[in-house]
Image (cartoon, rainbow, N blue to C red; front, side, top):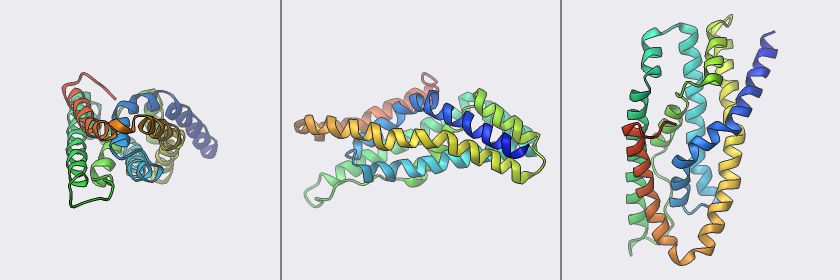
Length: 215
């Protein structure tokens, strides 16, 4: 019974990750990938900590549901607070991207800019997972009624893997290829576009912070 529930939850998460979640994450991830030259290797360095953060976030939610931590549940359900946290981390990422690009363009450094701030990327992934929609609520409900903490963790992990799998494929393969081709055709504006990306990301961070955008 538990195994079938686990499989069903994975399928639900798979469809969730391939639709709504993918679209809502695009404004946040596109400028980060663009600022990092949109190569496959650089994209993976950005996406892996975010993906690990998302999976960890879903496991955290399942544990909260199982343990019945009402105070933490109240904090997570506070969309304004979550907006402040995610907006703040997004602004930190924008700042790190800007300064890393400035450093890479100096006369003393000829190597391409590498993605900075794995902790900030990880936290962004965690805060992204804190959006309590219907699929996430289903995962938390199943975790709350599970027979053991092991199954609660398993539900969170299965949901996290399902929600991240197609999402990761889309951003690491499809969107990275689109951005790479775009930069190739707009090579004369490459430097300008890469420096505009952190500014756009900062704008997204401010919009999230102000509550104009909800991810």
